[in-house]
Image (cartoon, rainbow, N blue to C red; front, side, top):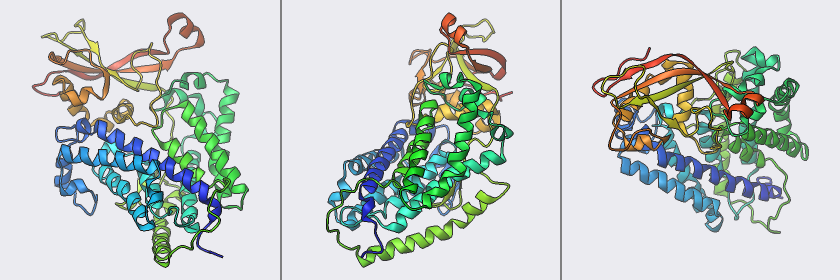
Length: 474
């Protein structure tokens, strides 16, 4: 009897690997289509400037050894191609060692991107993809049944994702303890989806049930992942249902989807494993065991943080992002603010000038425009605009660069937007930003006006600025 592997998880591994490859594909596609304006040579936070001040040991990355926009694009599109090949099952047609190397390629490429991504890549799901992607390297292919220790480590990641998120909520905003956070959250979350308006208008008792169910799923159910089957399958299934609820209620990039992928690895699905699977080769057992010991040792700091009263969320404790700590929404905003950016072609900017609004793809802007579904695709600028509205400090490093590029009608920057109000060859003379308070309309207001949002001017965020010098924000 093979003590090292679990053939009964053959189908679960297959589902996990193919789905993870799909997440990788979305992540690389997001990088390929957005990097030039964000971190490219002429981006808001250029990689070459970052590379000049950060040593390789702090942020291991191919792009600290060499950077050009062409090289970055080649790496990102290579990541897309490899992810697509993995989703199609190419790793199963290779020798075990070659399949492992193939899984290592997207991990190395995405690590290189994340470690130079700076603010644009400072999200928990980036580290989560890297941690899970590293484990996928050692999960094997059709030459061997799934290693028990790697399946355990995948559950260990899922446990930390859910339990860490549950703890930070209970320790954070008291609305989680009072079961009232979802009275606000569907309205104030970073990027609402097409159904978020309807979720917000659920009756108050339904919101209480949502929060209570969340606490059970994040603080009780994760422990059951380590119980015998079918209890572990039931626990993972509850997590999947909860994550699908979150998919429907908002745009959280691929956070929900990769959590679903993790949960799939714990499901006891009907197995179609061959009747006779060769025992794992000795070299494979040694490598997997050594990696498991390393990851268990690296778990010390994330666990210490998770049980600490001063718990922080979404932190990586090693430059390779091998074992991380997770959590989300320890505090919930009660009021939604949005930064609205406008430009004018007038020579002298006045209040009554012809100010035209830039439209973003995902973040709220035009009150009559219904929020769209973008997740698992990640609109990085839209997400950072949400943080900018919370406090100008969140945008100190990049907002001035954004305004400068809008004044130039920079093609790559405009591609991040839904619509620019100015023709490509006629950039605005001035750009300004204003802060508005947004709230969902009521059922009656929606019927009468067709508007999903009602917005109220709060204050100036950035005074009219011209290309000769970007003024300081107020």
